[in-house]
Image (cartoon, rainbow over all chains, first blue to last red):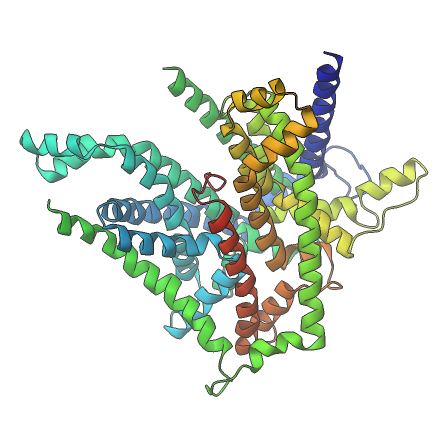
Length: 262
Length: 273
């Protein structure tokens, strides 16, 4: 009895220790974003100045817009291509299916640096100039596999019989798909989209190799700033991003729990 | 719609994958195995044995093995404690541990730079308490710290996923048969969580081995890893043939890791997101 209590206490201490390790750097960024002293090791008083500067900076705002537009478009296109592909793959015979799924795993298991370099070489070989387009294509490429992996399990759970029943009852194939199959796989499609969106937001390495000059996302902007010396407005940006992610995740968490309870 | 017609649905995807995954990867092979004028050579690949490149590769392997081991040592008890709390999936505690992972990778690494710098926050606090300073910025130790911090969730999640699936009755049975806690962990829980452990090891080892960002930010320009060497060949040196040749060496390690996953995590238990 005493042993299990000790174990429980030790377990909790360990959890707290890991939490401090995980959150200390993030807390640092948040605190520094309100520090009016430019120096990192002195507290010069509370200020919102860096937030004002952040919204005035055209480069940061442009990078922020690029990041969101690329994340949204790449997730959307990858979701469409991926969902349609999952339907096709599901109808394949075993051998081609295994082959396709093996290729599907390549972008996920490959190191980002190799994926980035290979795409860059590809774009240059085909004479596509590096820029917004190439970042978008690259993000779609590494997003599609995640969509397929989210949709396939849902597709396996749906019964072919229900689709055929709809056809027997006079539905056109398109109607049968949208009224019967699609509602079943919808949760998979949505989680695929969200996963793709966050993968795109977080990517640095592949963007770094495929972006060319003159365009930045938040990640590539931070990377170039770090080498020149960090401006406090970047701390403000990190705080805003962290806050947004926190709110989005809490909202989606509550929404999911509500759906489960129903 | 007949079956053949439905297979066509996969066509756009297959063309996309050929155009943007298979052809680009083949280009790495072509560049890596040719000279600048296009004649066949092994020189780019073999240049890994030149002194600087070999040193960078060995350092990368050493640092990524150390980080992987630290991640494993930290993650297993964490996953075990989380399982012991009998949380349902999507509960708040699990969520809190996943949250930092959603923060931008570069911003997280930037945060460690602010903490570790010579006049950074940790040193300011240590100085205030009259303790000796911590001078690990721009050393391999800082890089290991950055790797552990960034890749720890990749180790926790697969192990937690597998532990969650272990039936409590299996553990209780071991207890009833007289095993103590340690014996239960070693003889029952660890063997059952091998798929998760192997996935976790691979998911930490591969990005750690190939990183150039963490070493660049936390190692200054003083520590060169194999990822830095390759990145510089493409962005600064612009010897793409050499860079591709070295990438092929890296791909060998990635293939070995994939083979490990295929062997120990057949059902992809650890990989499920």
